[in-house]
Figure 1 (cartoon, helix red, strand yellow):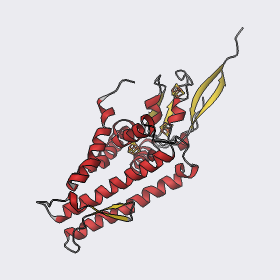
Figure 2: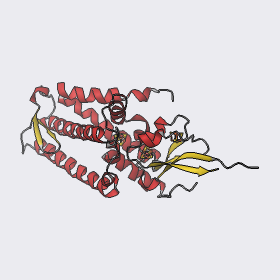
Figure 3: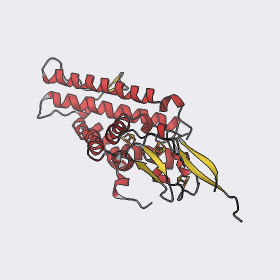
Figure 4: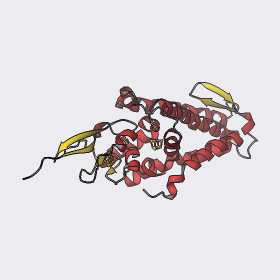
Length: 69
Length: 197
Ligand code: SF4
Ligand code: SF4
Ligand code: SF4
């Protein structure tokens, strides 16, 4: 039987992202990248939900979300 | 997260600020911080300068992060709004052109060289101790004084918002950052979407 698990992961509000890349620099698992100078995007599989990017983001546009996987 | 050579560019930023205290003509080097980001944005369509090479961003990270000189609070919502960011970009440009106009007047002989560095577009700080004459036209020095004022002003603002908010708060409204993002948007389309997964 599949067990219901919760996973915490980062989520970028891309319309407000300034594409500075501060989050990319602090992610310990390389789960973030800045897409074409427009906004940061999170690779959901890699993100371990540590929240470092959210703390670093100068625009505070990264939220941590709980997801059921 | 192995350190690369470009992670040490904050030293160059610091050196730039320091050199302006000894000889104002070094201020010309700051043009690199204008042309390299624009070149990368236009040629490659990325914010590679911000994301990798910007020494000022690194310096703010270091002072606010490692040295703990930041309160690490959220930046107020209005400061990260598009209205403020674009408004600041326009204001910055207007002031920049005013500086270029002053330089032109000195070149044209209509105005004498002012040996001052203008801080926050208002305060004229005497700076004659960093000027030892030039073999070029006085206008060359006028541009150096003006440009150094631009760089010092943005550093001061960067330090203030670093202390009040997060270390790299300046990057939210930095005119170069806003401008390169706009160029990228013009080049790469505008695929704004909230993250869907
Ligand atoms: S929460 Fe941690 S692992 Fe996930 S993207 Fe942010 S820094 Fe990387
Ligand atoms: S740190 Fe924040 S504003 Fe900067 S690229 Fe990452 S999500 Fe965007
Ligand atoms: S936004 Fe400005 S200060 Fe920040 S990394 Fe880009 S150019 Fe440097």
